[in-house]
Image 1 (tube, helix red, strand yellow):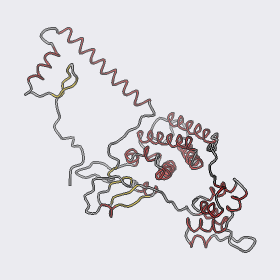
Image 2 (spheres, rainbow, N blue to C red):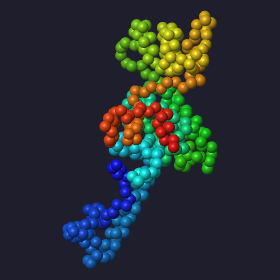
Image 3 (cartoon, rainbow, N blue to C red):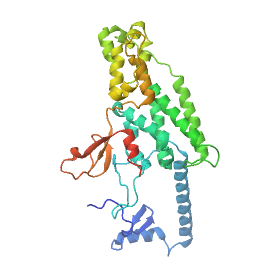
Image 4 (cartoon, rainbow, N blue to C red):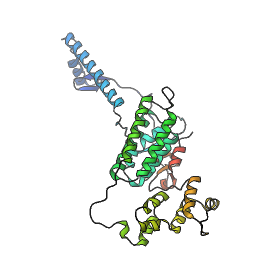
Length: 357
C-alpha cells in the first residue's frame, strides 16, 4: 500500500535569507556562499548590517501580522483543494493518523462549484439543511466559514435566477431555528467560535430572509408561448413532473384552467404512489364526500407522517474499495479492477451518517 501521509520524521532543509529572497543552503555551491557573504557584509560594515537585519525583521513581522489579520477578518476567504475527492478513514493506521471529520469532507468536496450545476443544486441545499439541523456543533472554524460562504452564494443565485425561493426560505428558517436553540446566551454556546460571530451570522440570515421576501418575479420580455398556451394534455403532463404538492397548488392559483387541472385525481394519485409505499398509503386512506379516495388530502397527510422520496440529478458517490468520496464523474486513484462496480451513490442523509463514528 502506498504511503499517503506526510512523514514528520523526514529530514529538514537549511534556508538562508538573501537579497533575492530565501534560498536553500547547499555547501557545495560556492556561488550561493558568495551570495550569503555579499548579503551579510560582516567584515566590512557591521553597523549597516545590524540596521538591515532589524528592518527586515520588522518588515517580516508586519507582513505576517497583515496576513493574519486578513485571514481572520475577511469572511469571504475560502479554502480550495486541488483534489475534488477525499479519503474517508475512521481510525488511525501506520500510514494515516486520526480520522476524517464532517467539516474536512465539507471543505474538500467543492460545494461552491456544485451549486452552479442544476443537477447538484438540490442535493447541496438538502445537505446544508441536514447540517443545520444536527451537525453545526461538528463543524470546525474553517468549515463554518465555508458553510456561510456557500450559503451566501446559494442565496445570491436564487435572487438572480428567481428560482427555488421556497426551498431556500425553508433552509434559512431551519438554520436560524437551530442557532436560536444552540446560542442561549454569552458563555453558553456549544458552537465553535466566539458567540459574537454567531450573533452576526444570525443577523445576516434575517437580512437574507428579508431579501427573499421582497423579491419580485419579473415576467420575461417578448411575446413567446406561455404554459397556458399549450394544450391541456401537455399542461397536465408538465404538472405530473412536479414532485412537490405545494408547487401544484401554487400553479393552480395562476388561472382557472390550471386550477381545474390541479384538482385532477390521477395527478395526486401518481404523486402519492411516487413518494410513498402501498403500505403507507393503506394506513392513511381518506374518503371524499362522493365515496372516492381523496388523493390530494391523503398526500398532505402522508407528508406529515412519512418522509418523501428523494431523487437528485447528481449525487456524491462512495467507493467501497478505496473508501474515497467524490462527485459522480470525478476521477480518483482507485486500484480496483472494475472501479465502476465499487461506487455507491449516497443520499444527503447517508453522507451525514458516514461520519458518525
